[in-house]
Length: 324
Image (cartoon, rainbow, N blue to C red; front, side, top):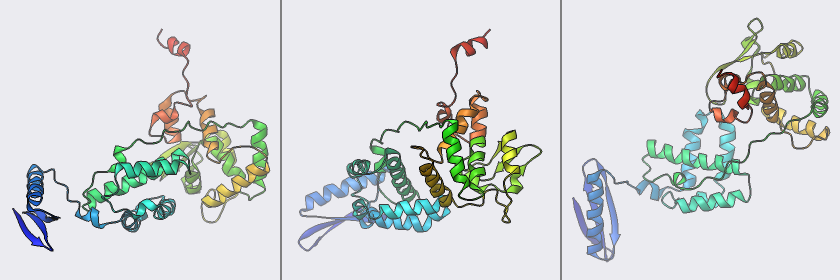
């Protein structure tokens, strides 16, 4: 039921429906108020009405703050997520209320950020915004359509394919060896197993089975556990790695590894090489032994097989032989 009254020489319309919060809006003339009230009543009756009162009162930075407080701490990558979201709060877009967070505003944000950072990072930031809005829609009664779903995402850049020759790799290993006793075996083990940095640093000696030649990863980037098969060389690397009292195979912090590796690469005079490229090199080598994509995915931990397509290449003549 709609009611109308004059407030400060304007017409205020109020729509009441059982099970719905009251909706009010002010107009200059009564006929406009009546038209608006009828449209709201029709939407409520159809079940298509979205209450935007919460969105109108809430700034985007307030939403980020609430998300940081209640949701982000539950994530494995909480420190990195917190850093990125705190930085987003300093962007002018954070001063908009949530009804102003339109597809056009998000598209402008995307274009401005593409001038400053790489497309992959922009894609990640848009994913953050989308996740926050979807969570607020589900859990906090946010009444807006997700604007991120309505804009074009930046094109995914070509995956890195940096592969070092033996001389370049030896130079880097000589430099990382000077940093501490664990950096060289860490890099060598990464080259043998294709494990991610976080997986390597979470590995405990108790999870190494020298008889079955496997390493058990309880938590991985995609949220699933897995067993990683170990080559003879991987076992040899472990046998010559010093043991630390805390039980970690590689008792190093992520930042120590990243900064140390950057320093070693610079000192070795090797251009454009990152720690994560060790995983690419390992997968390239493993793809020569495992042409079955499912086997390679079981080792690497990839859930999306398309990510492995650039490592495994099937020759038509080899496939033809299997058809005989």
